[in-house]
Amino acid sequence: MGSPQDDAYRLLNEYSNGFMVSQVLFAACELGVFDLLAQAPGPLDSAAAASRLGCSPHGTELLLDTCAALKLLKVEVRGGRAFYRNSELSSTYLASGSPTCQRNMLLYMARTTYRCWAHLAEAVREGKNRYLQVFGVPSEELFSAIYRSDAERLRFTRGLQEVWSVAGRSVLAAFDLSPFPLVCDLGGGSGALARECASLYPGCQVTVFDIPEVVRAAREHGAFPAEGRVGFREGDFFQDPLPEADLYILARVLHDWADEKCSRLLQRVWHACRPGGGLLVVESLLDEDGRGPLTTQLYSLNMLVQTEGRERTSSQYRALLASAGFHGFQFKKTGGIYDAILARN
Image (cartoon, rainbow, N blue to C red):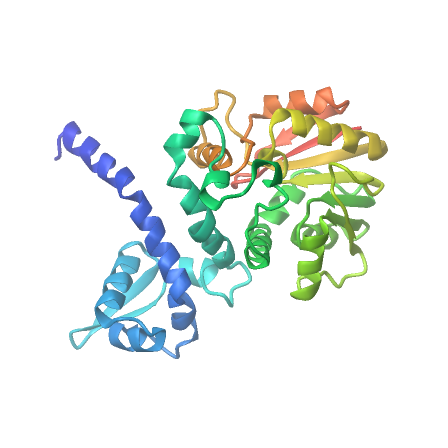
């Protein structure tokens, strides 16, 4: 039996090596390891995988064995040779052919978010995000130019589609939204959550309201919803008139902004909402003491390094909503990463 000091030291090493685990996952996604194994007629040895990936045999073997140790791959030994195949986790969430694949969001994290986290200490010291310094974006253009290219915007938009393929139904089913026939998803990206809403509530019509660049990308890259009950309108929700609706959805939006901007947006939504209507807020909720869940705390630090916002407790959201005029506040933990808040006009 190890001593408490041994256990503490093991935990310290687990934490300090955490970035290496992330990089193994990111590199395997970028190199196409999981897609290769998903498409192969059977398990592959490291030499065959290296040849098909165009990578060094030595590096490929090290990567595959580490993925196996992380339970991203399964390995079997035949005739002294190791053969690799995807684990259930990778087949479900990392192979591009899976309807719940999360590859685009992981690649966005690898190429953008990870670089900002290298400057966490400076962000904590200064109390402001590092996106400006890391990528050279002028502060006044942060949210109009936060994506460095159309390709990065598309990657993030597709990443959000992937997130809602897993988490969308649970947040939309947290409350009965059937009394709201006209729904507007503000900042709804390519419409992934809107399609889930239309599927779950056949009696509703959903409008996605987002900036022109996002709508254009959705049209150009085949993500634009074809269903008659889901449509798009272009605009800036801080400046332009909002589409009329019985229910507005703000999913992963408020956490991007400081309280003052959240209040301004919520006041605009309250004024636009039909009488008796509502607002569904979808966010990862902090515990009331702010000390958990760990994933939400990490997301809040991510808001510090990448945006001007933060994750909040249900009470903090209640105060923001009440200050804008909303009442009848309800919230539900979904058991997943994202939770749901419903308030009435």
